Every structure is written in C-alpha cells, then in structure tokens.
Length: 191
Image 1: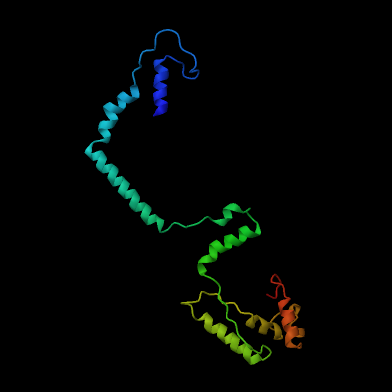
Image 2: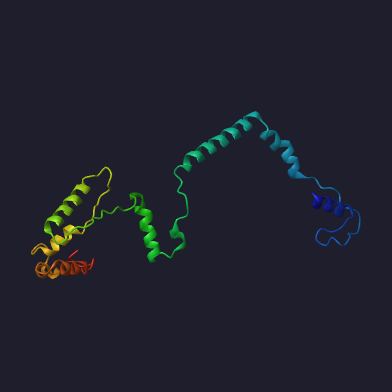
C-alpha cells in the first residue's frame, strides 16, 4: 500500500516512471480507459457470482479433495535414493534391487548352537529342517537357501562335475572340506 501511495504522488507531481527525479513538461496526461477493468466488471464478475458457477466451483473443489485423499494411500513416501546416484554404480544397483525386492521383507536366519557338523546325521537333520521351512509358504516367502544341501552334493562323489573337486573333497577331513567348499566361486559351473 505505501508503494501505491507513493506512485500516486509521483503521478500527481507529473514525474516520469523510471526517472522519477525528473518532472515531465506539459500538461498531465489524461486518464486512459481501463479496458480490462471494464471487461471484468461487465462480464467476468457477474459470471463468477452466478449460483450455478458457485455450485460447480464447490463441487469441483470437493471432488479434487476426495481424489487427493484416496490417492494419498498409494503415494510412496520419501525420495527414491537412485535419483542422487550415478546410473550403473554399485549403490545405484543396490538401491534399485532393494526398491524392487524390498517388499519381500527382511531375511530370516536360523542359527544352530552346539551342532557337530562333522556328523552326517546332523547335516541330514538340518536339510530336513530346511525342507520343512520351505513348506511354510503362508508365512515364509520362497526361496529358502541353505548351504547344507550344496555342501553334501560337493562332498558326494559323482553329484558335481570332476572340475569341482568332489572326488578329492570326499576323502578330506571336515575342516578341509568346508575350506574348499567356501572357496568355490559363485560364477563357476559348480554353483
């Protein structure tokens, strides 16, 4: 408001717009016809204040609020981390995988205490527990991964190819078998 009052004083004093320190010469310009204001007062304002226009405005507003409320339930909260990482980087791939498969829930681990892994009967029991967990499809999402089955295949002659070293591993003690088993590369044909 103070700026408008100062502008009105500038116009009365017949000063220029940009160079307000200089006065113009000659008579003050006549007030011009305000076409926009005349159009607003004559056509737009009566249209906006019609009863039908008011009802339509309220109906559209209520409809937009309802649609917004329903769509908020499907709105993902937070910022996707991949926006800030370079495509193809390790972190980009990690968060991409997490975003794609994260709805499966956190992984669960079954840990056994005081188990003698050198006893083949204990390994069979652990494989049985693994098979029983796989049947709980209502509460546990497949696949269930266990090292016991692949380990038994590794130490059994003829199950894996000769390149995997199963023939040699079957004759070694348990600690050496486990050492060789954990040294198998994931990319190899043995996995």
